Image (cartoon, rainbow, N blue to C red; front, side, top):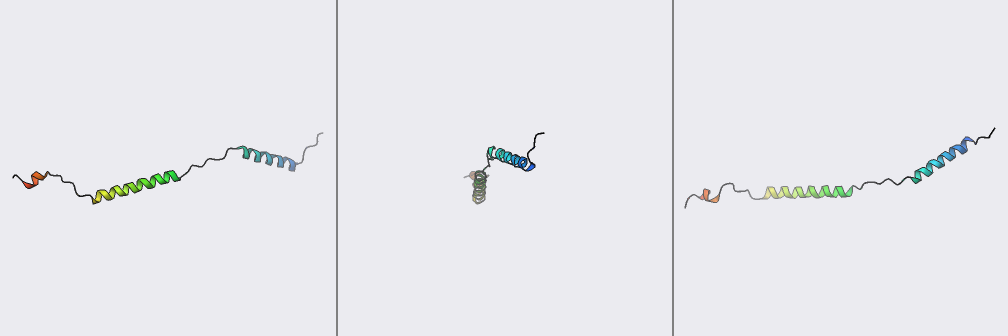
Length: 72
């Protein structure tokens, strides 16, 4: 009868094989958050500037100036 290897050697081989497979996997690519965060901050700042300009702008005249003065 053939002599089987010890369970310790078999477990060490399986662990070494798993380690080799893990090293062969390509590294996980993480998505960068900074470009999206910078774009969101830029658009938020632009919205605040636009809102400030809309509030501080003089009111629009809805009636023509001639109608307010009357006929000459």
